[in-house]
Image (cartoon, rainbow, N blue to C red; front, side, top):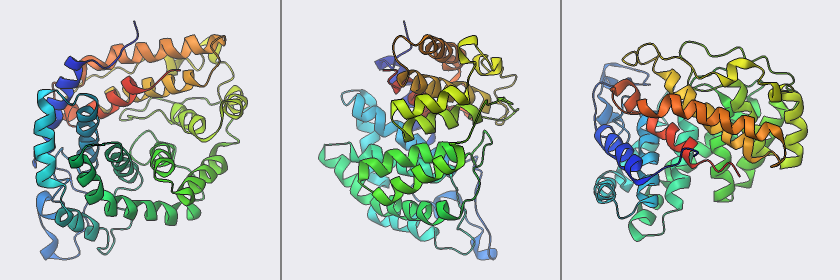
Length: 339
């Protein structure tokens, strides 16, 4: 049977995320010191997103928690998530997070990975129909709108995509930003994301898939495929995809079908490879959803997704270097509808 999210897995992920979104140290800051007065700790700089080893992981740790709360509202962890969110997602705290973006040299702060995840978090909060969820969504909205404006400024001057398999990957950020733009009715951002994706990738042909690299958690090849699937309709995507990965039915390039080997999960960079396996599974399921049921490549894509989930799901929790972020990528994969 295909892997799916169940109550026990949801509880494991929620407990892990509750254990790290308020864990301030150890912490890796993305912070420019303009003077000695700026030598502050994570919570002083970011009163909401101060945990989870770094800002962006805390953002998508909260996406994990809010998603699980919505899907399993009766779970014991749901009440703890709500109580903690009441304490942190306040207009005062959000104002501090927004003000941080106006600091000198803060323009590239978390670009583009953290930008995409913050918008994804807002998208999730807007789906909550209960009164508390609506309060959190309203409180966070100014920060989401600030990052949406940053995308609108950045995309028109972005001549080239960034194809690496780490935080700078532009296909991943646009994929998340599109969900926000479409759900929020932000047609300007939606049009900019689609225009950038087509400008960067419409001519991509016969991907060689020089991956994985030692610290990747995104597949440069499959992430472009997932973005282009999200950008176009099935027919338009199919024509493009036929040229992007023309030998997929023969399991080529072979590296895309082989889950990455993780040699040391206590090494934060090497642990990225568990994320690569999870994000590949997400992409493979997305690709499968755009292929006709009779297309033999659909079964190939679904099998590849399951193989990557088999390799990674047992390791989502256990070591903090992976545990502080991997559940988010596991959720992306498990919740993807293969059609």
